[in-house]
Amino acid sequence: TSSRKATEVFQAREWLGVVSDNLISNVLSMIIVIITFASGGFGLIVEEFDGYNFSTLRKPSSTAFVIGCCIGLLISSVCLKVVASSVNTVLVCFSLAPWRFHINHPDLSKDMRASWGGFWLDEYDWLADPEREEVMLC
Image (cartoon, rainbow, N blue to C red):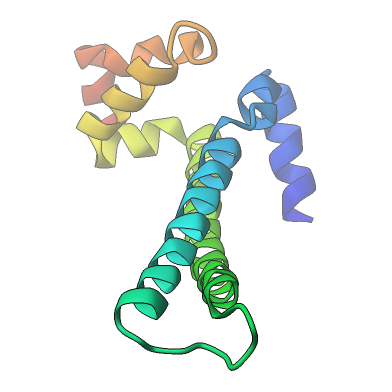
């Protein structure tokens, strides 16, 4: 399967540290929690100040907060899972063909190597060599 092949590529390039680093997923999870509570607060504000009742229960404020949280959780989870998948796709594509990324997007490639370089991407220092770039374009 494709996930097995991607894992083999990461193992061959010794990039398992990059893949197993859950920084992106942890940050996106924190953003989801923030959006969830902000949406709950927005639901509470709408219920309190606009006079709109979300339910006929005894505690309409807590109901408005819960409904707002549920809506915020649902929407932010879907949207940010797309972002997480995009980041994973970029990692896999970059690990398979970093030179193509460098040829098509040299500025982004330079930024990516500068951000992750030194620790994981030392083997791609040749991408910055202008003579090598001319050979790759031929």
